[in-house]
Amino acid sequence: MYTEAELRVLATAQGGPTISDLAEKLDRSVNYVSELVDGMQEKGLVHTIRSGKTKHVHRSSARAIELFDQFVQRYPHIPFPGLLAGASLRVLYHLDEPASPTDLAEWAGVHRSTVYRSLSPLQHRGIVYRDDGNFALNDEFEELATLAREFAHHRNRNRVEAYVDTYTILWESLDEFLVQSDEPIEADAFHVTGPEQFQDYDLPLLARQRRYYLYAESREGLSPAELCCHMLVIGDDTRSRSYCLLLLSTVNIDRDELLVLAEKYDVEDSVAGLLEYLDTHGAKRTASFPTWEEFRDLADEYGVTV
Image (tube, rainbow, N blue to C red):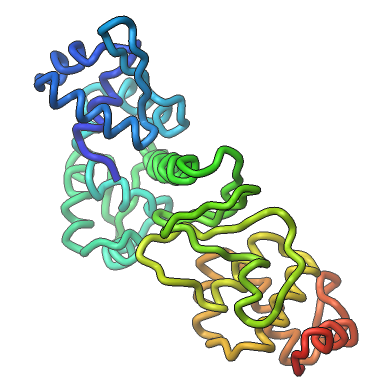
């Protein structure tokens, strides 16, 4: 997630040091540290204030950096910048509960050997241990998983703040997040979702001024199954469920894919309820679902056969 050099700057840049001060403390050239700080400023980790010809470096007030400070100050003998650099934070992000190397590799998007390489130094220092084949954090260091999640959250916020000032992150994972904004975001990694996207399936819905985007790199678009899950994250109410029912009745969605995505977005119960509602023609429903007659009338308005 971040390099050792970046984490060393965060551990060192307390009190607003100058670039020269940092270079001396890190035993690096001024040019190197200046370029490093510029890159960290783009990531929202630090900001600089110029006083005459001198530039002072100030760290972000993000919760991630506060947590990082707590570990650095509580355990000054542990070289956290080196231990948490590279893929380590990606792996720790998923270590809020004991997990196997195979699962950690899949969740973090890295090779199994990277999991072992990242956690081995932490294991040697008693921060991580193995139990019945699973890796786990020792009680004293459980907040390292929280730290990893806070760094990911900070990175996600920095990504969206490059385009808009006002927004709400509705859901996030290590590399993706669902965001709501009143302003349009025109960038390749931000994919339109929510009510506006239903028009692609000939279901033009009355969308509010709010806009919804999934941030995901290397994506060309969203599947209808994913759109359904996004709607439930945006608002798990009768209106959203009715729209999802229309979509499920219009498009032949792979149910296995839908259930996997439902788990990813933490909407398993809602998706299971949608499928049961359709399978029973509304015989099994809760108060947050329309009656079958109400849904059939809505479907007729959109020319959807149910």
